[in-house]
Image 1 (cartoon, rainbow, N blue to C red):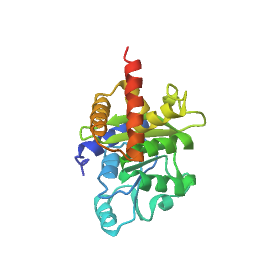
Image 2 (image 1 turned 90 degrees about the vertical axis):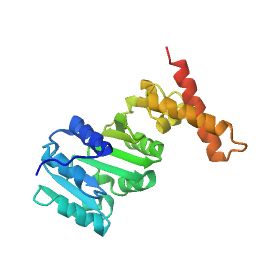
Image 3 (image 1 turned 180 degrees about the vertical axis):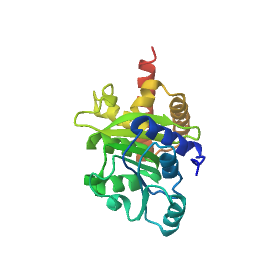
Image 4 (image 1 turned 60 degrees about the horizontal axis):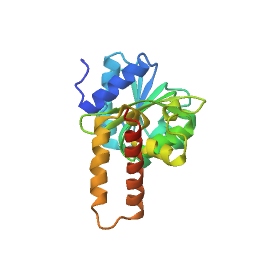
Length: 231
């Protein structure tokens, strides 16, 4: 079989895994759905072996069909309970919300590998915060064509240098975790466009709740930081 054609989100994720973990001895994809990402990684020789973890019966059957005759185990279970400690060297989770991803990562810490590749559908700031507090350094963040954000983390034993320019106070640190320290330092066009659009949206509303007020405050902090560091 030839490597399958992936949608942009998964292709960018596969490329990121290839960049950071070419030749990974074993890669796990949790919530494998159709199994296409692992099939691509295996048939492109990016990883030597794979483990697909899936809780639901239909996606489990889809992954089994897709990954048949490849060096890959398809396992039924909830999150990282399908893994043994030290079994994998890299891990991907994509297309889930922040609370689901954080539950998966937190429930079996002994099974976390050195490399994590994550694509949260929402709540990405909470995922960055978890990584910062759990000793995973943010190595890369990518903004895709359809506004998905991909994150690559590597386990380390010291403070994450990605946040060095934002650690001077708690507000700035939180702002960088919500909007992305790499994106902020890159002055990423998609981030700037989103910040400006959200700011306009909130500022014309007649009344804001507590959560919206806090969000707008962080947006203003981000925009001020970008303006102060524009030269």
